[in-house]
Image (cartoon, rainbow, N blue to C red; front, side, top):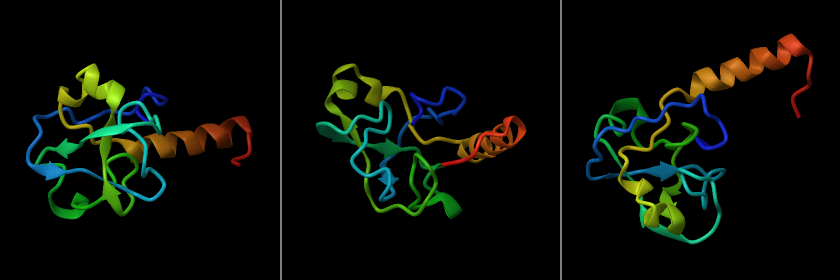
Length: 110
């Protein structure tokens, strides 16, 4: 999701021991590049992203967590799994901006 939406901001703090979760909609996708092929290494997130109300939520869209998140083989080889916590921080503002842009320009949401 973060590859296709450049306005999304990732946490990128040092990862802890917490394992990232994804919802049913995001299950099977790499959290960095959105590919559906060859999941390889499990996603670890920082302790701040797995605390309080955000505990157990999807790290991509914020819905209820369903399964463990994985990086694909390509992202593991390119060492994108070592860049820090991959949790999307501002997913709510991106959805709000998209709603008002569609309302302003008169395009229907499908």
